[in-house]
Structures are given as structure tokens and as C-alpha cells.
Length: 83
Image (cartoon, rainbow, N blue to C red; front, top):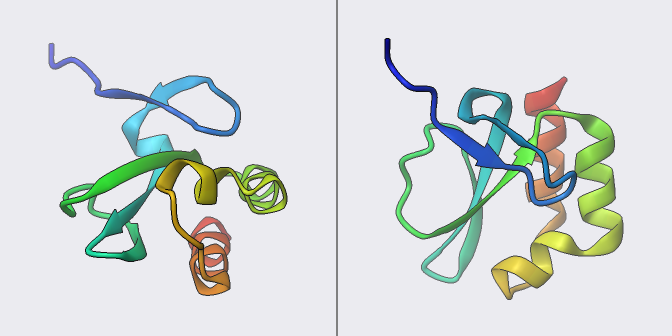
């Protein structure tokens, strides 16, 4: 039996299987949504839930963790992936 990689959502702080999360990466001074989970760079995970993305945006959680401004396009992309 293969073990399932678990990651923690930076908003809800719950540990979930990697497939249930979306990775956002700061790579070469830009922030991208990493659906493959393989992009090099500093990454954080968000639960695939609209309210979680909205909370991250409102509280500036991604900005704090990735230490850079997060363009609105990143949040729009996250929301469109979830929908």
C-alpha cells in the first residue's frame, strides 16, 4: 500500500491529502498557481474551497507567507480551478 502524501492548508491548518489542496508557489519573484505540484520554489497549500481562498485573500495570508505581493490574477485562477 502506497502512503498518501499529506500537506497542511495554510488557512485552515488541517492536514489533508495533497490531491485535495492547491499549491501556490513563489518562483523567481513571481507567484503562480502550481497545479502539477512540481514547480520549483517556495510553495504553500490551500484547501480546494472558495471560502478558504477568500479568507486567504482577506487576511493576506499568502502575502505574509510568500513575502511578496499577490496579484489578483492568482486569486482569480484559484477560484476558477475550484469552480
